[in-house]
Image 1 (cartoon, rainbow, N blue to C red):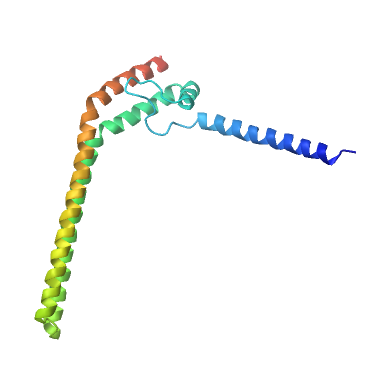
Image 2: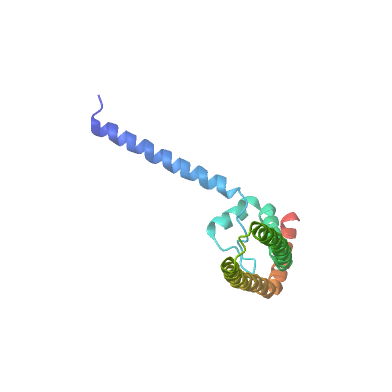
Length: 175
């Protein structure tokens, strides 16, 4: 008959083996998943050890994924410009809707006789505050988009070079 100490020992041994097994299987499964994002430096050297294991297991698939990520990064300036245009369209539509609502409210106030000088003064103050807030928000958004665009443009030469290096590596795997 086993003592409580022996039962405890067997239970701990089982749990230890079980958790190491789960950890090993998790690592094995992850090594077949594509890397998350660009995982190489600008000389196409793999940065992390876990990504090196992925490259060993995946081969050409790994490098194709890296090539796709580089090409996506190369297109970033175009995406920032498109985002800026979309944002401007939204702002213009918002402005038109806001003007329409203000005109409707103004008409209702005049018709109801609630358009007193005091109410007009409060609306004018509120409009001025909204204008200042909108101007501040627009300048912050423009500044963010401009800095993102500038950074993307600055990276272009290195990314184009990286695209060429990865293409060569990919061709070596395919041949």
